[in-house]
Length: 86
Image 1 (tube, rainbow, N blue to C red):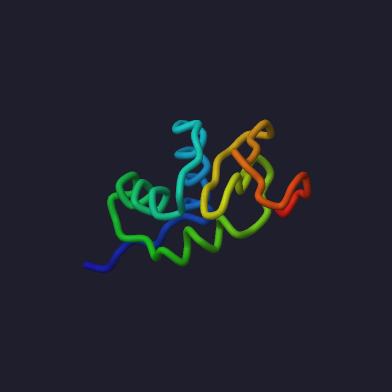
Image 2: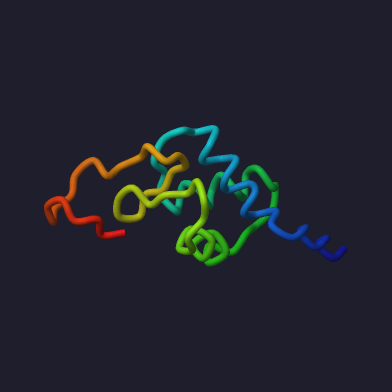
């Protein structure tokens, strides 16, 4: 039996829902694993990474390889002083 196509933005909606519910920084690998668990099917890791690398309202990279939602998130440390690197 052929896999049913995902609806547009299904993976991105799940990524945002996961990050909102966890309310903590998560790695791309954690997010990928949780997306697959939620959807009950395999998802290409590149699909998740691609979404995380694009700019989205409410999605922030808070440290190397760590992402979360919310405007108040900031890196726990910045090795380059006060410069905003992302």
